[in-house]
Amino acid sequence: MRAPVAAALTVVLAGGLSGCGAFGGEDVLTVYSGRNENLVGPILEQLEDAVGTEVEVRYAGSSDLAAQLLEEGESTDADLFFSQDAGALGALAKAGRLAELPQDVLSLVPEQYADDEGRWVATSARARVVAYDPRQAPEAAEMTSVDEVLDERYRGLIGVAPTNASFQSFVTALRLDRGEDGAREWLERLVDLDVQKYDNNIAVLDAVDSGEVALGLINHYYWYERVAEQGEDNVNAEIRFLDSDDPGALINVAGVGVIAGSEQEDAAQRAVEFLLSEEAQQYFADSTAEYPVVEGITSTEHDLEPLGQGSSVDLNDLDSLEETLDLLDEVGLT
Image (cartoon, rainbow, N blue to C red; front, side, top):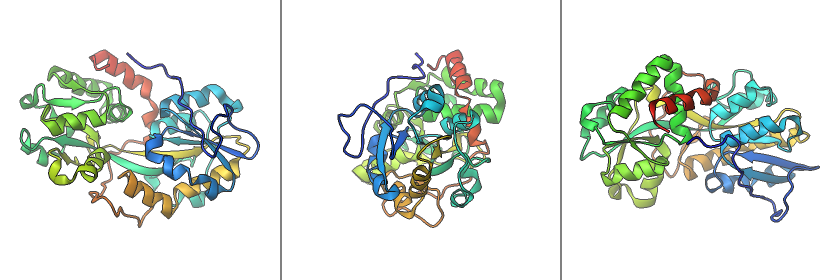
């Protein structure tokens, strides 16, 4: 069943305001964060010092917060939107709800990691990969395309998380790359192979690691985090980065945008600059095993494979989530 767009929001206050139910106000920077508190809470706790004003953070799903921002319109308390994926940022940008960022900020990242009209900028990147059990599918170490997953030998042994935003972004990229009919055909073949459905990327990785399935589609950092926690010798699963021009190699980004009409625009701009600072970029590389988007920073904790160019889809176009959800409904993956 499809979740309501504007689901109940989890509310967390930062900056010593626990117990207060109101957001926004004079001299308060209000951040709507679609990124999980467990992942980015430590770096957002440093925002107050970085921007020089009180900071409040509201955590929820990126698509839920984007829907909330569209519903709130100009009356929103939010000053900054921190999204888990580019699609939610693209939806707000196309609706005119994000302010244009300064060129000196946009120039900090490669061109493909910022909106063409400067309305949002990436803060970190992640790659879709194939996780595989080398005991059941050693040939997966040489895969180049997500089409190779659709082999009869993997019947009942492929794991995906169809309700997860990252899988849905992959399907959106597949639609953009191959059209509706091409994406439908790929998904129908997947379903015909008795694909196994899981709640999230971690559960898919668990299933591959235990041998419950032979292959799974996940984001790269879940594997790196597992290896950092348990040691590579204790993790059976391996991952394969596909060829850069394949939709299965989608490189999606987390990113930020300043809400149009914000009364805290200067503080919000400083927050964007902080998230692109060396300190924050090093945090993403070391703590969340994501790829920094500012050149010259590498992880000191994870041996990340060099990131390719990824598929050629415009990240703004990943906002066509409704069409993706309709397609997943149609093929029986929801």
